[in-house]
Structure formats: structure tokens, C-alpha cells
Amino acid sequence: MNLFRSTAAVLALTTGLLALPAHAEVVQENVSGDPMYTANAPSGYSMAGDILIARPLLIGATVIGAGLFIISLPFSALGGNVGEAAEQLVGVPAQEAFVRCLGCTLSGYKAD
Image (cartoon, rainbow, N blue to C red; front, side):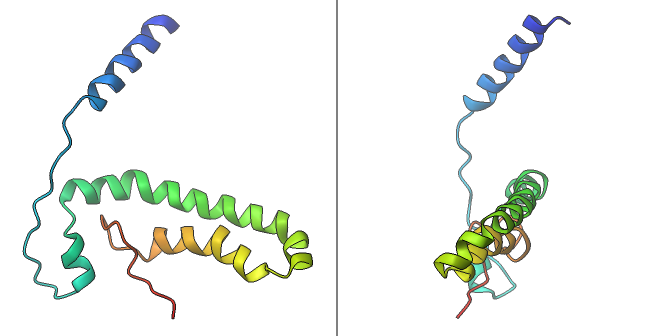
């Protein structure tokens, strides 16, 4: 296939996927007793999308954030905000990638 046909096919498929109606989730009974998980009640589609798309992107964001943190470390040290830079560039993406339940939209980790 030439470049024009490939591009047209990708655009047509993308437009078709974007035109699909939004899927309304039904909140199901949860027997785990965890209020965070019960409030979210993720479906199987949410879990599959999370493990296939969101988690790899969040792990990549953690790695990129770590690189940016190392680059910005001299400036953060001069400004006195090394902890805040580490938390925002590395900690937040890592918490969302590794602590959040599968398919949930909120992280279960609360640092007090």
C-alpha cells in the first residue's frame, strides 16, 4: 500500500473509533470491602485499557521524569526545592503506575 492509502486508512479508523458513543459503566457490587475500589468499580474494559495503554505510558513518564529530575537537580538544589521536584517529576507518575488499582481512576496511596 502506498503512503496515501495507509494514511487514509488510519484516519478513517481513528475517526470511526472517535465516533463511537461513550460507554456508560454500571457500578457493580464489590465484595472486597475496600471503599476506594467500591467507589471506582472498574469494568473489564477499563482494566484492559489500563494494563495495555495507561501503565506503559505512566512507566515511561516515570523514566522521563527521572531523567528530567537529574537534569534539573543543580537548579533545584540552588532553589531549595529538591523534594518537591522529585515528588512531582518521579513520585506522582510512579504512584499512579504502581500503586493505583487496575482500572481505577484514583490512586489508593495517600502520603500523610
